[in-house]
Length: 198
Ligand SMILES: [Zn+2]
Image 1 (cartoon, rainbow, N blue to C red):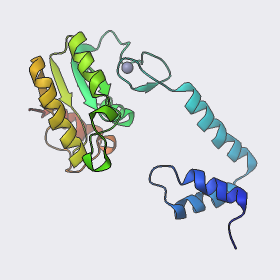
Image 2 (image 1 turned 120 degrees about the vertical axis):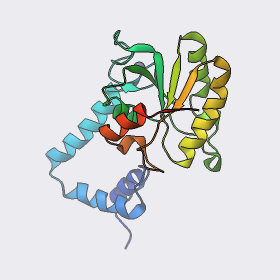
Image 3 (image 1 turned 180 degrees about the vertical axis):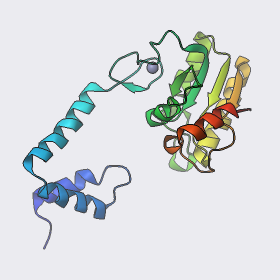
Image 4 (image 1 turned 90 degrees about the vertical axis):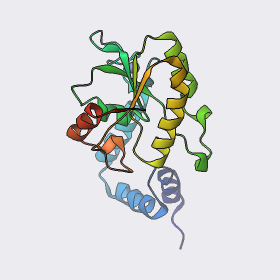
């Protein structure tokens, strides 16, 4: 017996979420079918509201309710320092480190030749444009400590060199293969303090 058509549709759409395979999609679908209607309404409502109210900041490409985002609109931030991260979740993790008072730039991913993700698929052009227009003296490359993140950091360091800007990479403490997003505040604080020039 096949799954009833409405359930099939739920599985198909939930399967598209990152990290969710066909089995998990089926489990989640049947779980939702068991939930009280009020809970289902809350789930739908929170997704709708989140999607409608969050927008990209034109300055750093962070996701925020306002454009520019609160970090870019904060006059007390050090405009000479730029921390480059892969995703808004990574920015959120680094923003918990109180010693860092500079600005951010969200690349929107990392270079991955195996997945055919090149410089045009992430915000390399926008970053270079920013370097030309803003007075930045140091760039911290805070991409993940995995092979994609390392490839991206090396590539960007080469591109930034001609601008005469100090380029640093997060230092010790981050586990190899580690995702910035899941690193705790103390580890990130040490990694920023121990950043090395590239
Ligand atoms: Zn911003």
